[in-house]
Image (cartoon, one colour):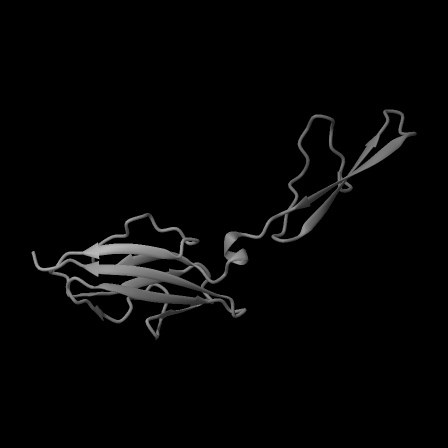
Length: 153
């Protein structure tokens, strides 16, 4: 297989597969007396990782107060959170899936893994916090966090 002998029923040597590439595996089966052979080709394509398919994503978002109504998923763009009346401001800490991506929260660049600027909240109002993630190739995604601060109890 690929130029190396392999006994029938035994595993071959390991074959490295590159993301986004098709590898050709050549298998030559030879008769016991060595006079006849047949060649088979297997083509294996390794998919790109999600990070390479979607380089403008976040691997997590942490809030300074409250928690999302649904679990964070890098391919879900909208999130909802309600915070108690006592919470007057909130920060978000986004982490990029790819370290070369840039993150912008409400018009301010934020380093991956660092809290955003403080966003003031007025009781009873819903705030739409926008997080833009831009990959090195210019691809962009927008995450939206809808934050509601509860009214005075």
